Image 1: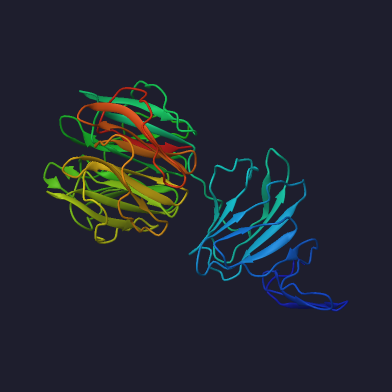
Image 2 (image 1 turned 30 degrees about the horizontal axis):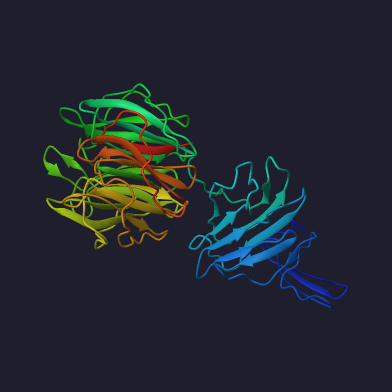
Length: 437
């Protein structure tokens, strides 16, 4: 039947009536003893009623039409499975690009990765047919409608880099997939402070801009093993105290900051091969000492900062890198804070200086809405850095408490900030961080 394309076919026999859609999918069935809305012509799949909830638990051998018109749906797979078990999911309302499905593999592997990874499907009209192989590979998609999208998962590792220890440095510290910070790695590239960093190409990172004795626009690429490359000649306006985040799932953006002529709102896009573009005219309020993070897997948000006084305004970044006008600020206005993603599709702003140092945080939803203040956890500080790690968690690290520190605070995949972890590596401030895989 898979060869029938571009027509509708009615199949009758033994009391069964099935209509095959233009893409070869069975749309309806009815007949003696048949109550299912859907039936798999290949046999073995029992189609269930349309799912509209935000959560569901799947059973092997079943097919599920998932209607995400009103909400994202998190699907929990069986806690145990045998080789050959199959489950099918299909986009009932062609709305997964707006409200995705999230697969929780419930302790088993998915395509060889453990269930700490975020697995998402975000294509309108998509159908997903998975089969359990073995303990090594776990559940494997055997059909996803031949779309180009793949499940989205965050990067495993992070890297803190550069900063001010009393003098400018270029040393780095790797963050493992369980949030453990490694000792100093000898620096590569020009030592500098007040720079920014973000991801690109899905599994690599880039440090950019900053200040030495003058403002800089140079960059340093980070490969997917965490190795920092030598300086790349700068593109765009040299500046410090900008912010950066990823967008479009595989690209990045540097934005705002302070140059030799003062604050700016210009941005510079980063391609999925790590090439920095020339200046894009600024949108929103000119400022510096702000932060930025990815949210919703393919969008970004700049927030807070110093306009001459502290502010809480934010600017959303679309999945094609377009920065939106100002959104009225939520939470305590402050500068010199940091931000990172967590939970696969959300973000968190944390710490900073509102007139005094603080440890408060503000969560960012998967639609870019900033929440009110969450009481601070850990030591209040400013000029720190933050990055994702472990696929769906985050870490704040280093900074200035009145003196330079190397302490860190882990962020769970639910956005909960942990108490201080004793620092590893050189205490410093005005550094940057990003993730890699």
